[in-house]
Length: 101
Image 1 (cartoon, rainbow, N blue to C red):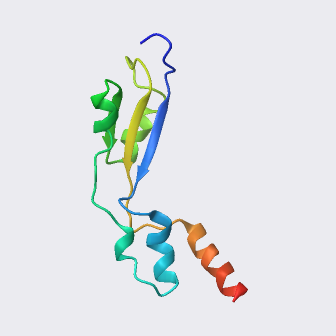
Image 2: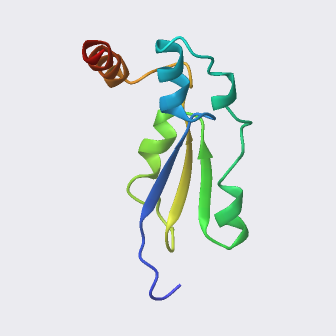
């Protein structure tokens, strides 16, 4: 595909509104509505003829960056994350919110 920039876009997919999933319980609020069903987003760009794949492991992400040999254009990686793992910054945000109250 001439004129197409060969780049990798990585979508980090935890099947949830990640920040809400972790912040709501810290505030004593229910988080059940912050999750959603797993959708393979790699199917959309693949339907348009782009390289796309879903990654279930960190090693698959490492193998795809930079572009795999033979890739002709942009690529989407739908990187699946564990929704039960929170960024360390979430606790820091919660601590700041408590100090403000």
